[in-house]
Amino acid sequence: LRRYNMTSTTKDPVLAVLSLSGGNDGLSTVIPHSNGLYRDYRPTLAVPDDQVIKLTDDIGLHPTMAPLKKYWDEGKMAIFLGVGYPNPSYSHFRSMDIWHTCEPDKIGTEGWLGRAIKELDPKGENVLTGVNFGRGLPRALAMDGVPVASVGDLETYGLLTGIDGDAQRNDALDVFGRMYGPTIGSSYALDYIRRTGTDALKGADILAKAPEMYSSDLEYSASAVGQYMKNIAQTHLADFGTRVLYTTSPYNGFDTHANQAQAHSALWTDVSANVDTFITDIRQADKSDNVTLFMFSEFGRRVTDNGSGTDHGAGSVAFAIGDHVKGGVYGEYPSLEQGDLLEGGNLNHSTDFRSLYTGILEDWFGLDAKPLVGYQMEKVSFFNK
Image (cartoon, rainbow, N blue to C red):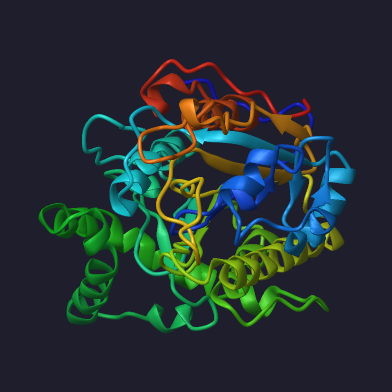
């Protein structure tokens, strides 16, 4: 595969990923405010028109996303409509697995970013090429022979350092086994950890230095998203050569079957504030020019509300923010007409998520996407070169 740096930046491109776990309601995130069917379907949950942050004559953002509006105004935020895949699964685990492995028809074991990390660092020269913040290891980052550090709390990660002797080493690897194992499968976990755990432990010594190297007057929220976005900033600003920084919002937090009006508002209040703080943080340090942030969820929500919330759906939205992102709207809003909805009353997809991955892999990382995505996809081009 080809490997090269983008000509638009002298630094290696970095991808930060924020996965919105649980199935974010795209219909109430990027709102089709001019479509009367939106309010017909959502008698209790529709956002009042005067509260929608209007972006175009047809769509706008949820009011709690106001901190992100500036990036739209700058032309640095891309909004992807109708994101999904054919024959959607309404299972959290299966759908997220499909997003992680790009395998909609079979169970995949390799993550798309694990494959990318292998190409970005083929000899494994940097044990911190990929870092995850949160519990477990997302399958998107899993690949045999590719060490990825998975950090629960960067402030205490250094507790794993200073390991001396086989007994302590085995104890530490057992910790990694419990952390990684449930995600990648018990039959595979032990061998995987033995192959990659030692390198991941080496990364602990390096990562432990990030907080003490960090200085900022900005405040992230005390939430898990706030902590992890701060950790991503700390790691990036420490110049460890990390190319992929990944985190996931608290488990199934966006699964708003009930009390959605309050819950969804609170979730996007937290996400928007911390994403804004993150971008501001790395900009103030003059280290934002080679970073792209990508946000997605495993599926959307059903078009019709259930009186208090929404049930599992299909087509949803995704976002990219960064200095080299070509801002705008990509894709078409799926039809809300009854006859165009999927069985169960769900939005169809108009943009295959693998087309977004192809754009990231080819235009941002400079890699040949087909072997990494597993399919020849029509690329969504959303970067300024």
